View (spheres, rainbow, N blue to C red):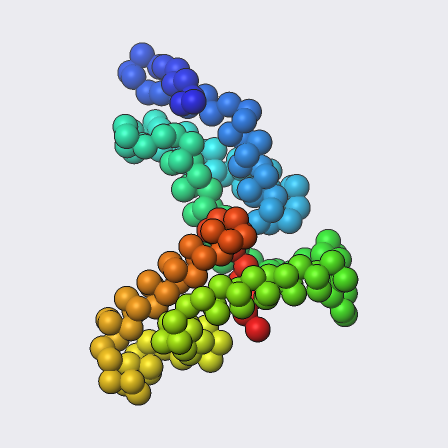
Length: 189
């Protein structure tokens, strides 16, 4: 649902009535990214201010939903805040962040093992060449360029093979375990 635009003044300026749903969504995104409610509220205010400014200046393309445009602004604002925190050395607020456990919880161990089993099952369905390429890239941390110089294949050809192997791995995981792009396991052991 596209928010209602209301005339602001006789000169034709407009203000987006973004609505509580979008504001709550922005608050959740900011809270997850920043960790505290005060920081999230400040970020949401900055996001909304920038969105209003963009609407007034006519910088929102007609074919782009306003919510998507505002989400893009949110990504930029949160990235700016994260960057400034890193510069100031505040990336970890120890007063609010609970101390990490020295050992993973039993549930974390079970989940990690299940993810490993799923990825290993899917890797077993790939060809030896695909598996080897993905292992060199993700386990050994090699660059495509170094693999290309050693193997005699062009870097572009290896990039394409890697892309196809990852798509196939993703499809195998989705078909077998119902993973989508956002929840696919990331562990490989």
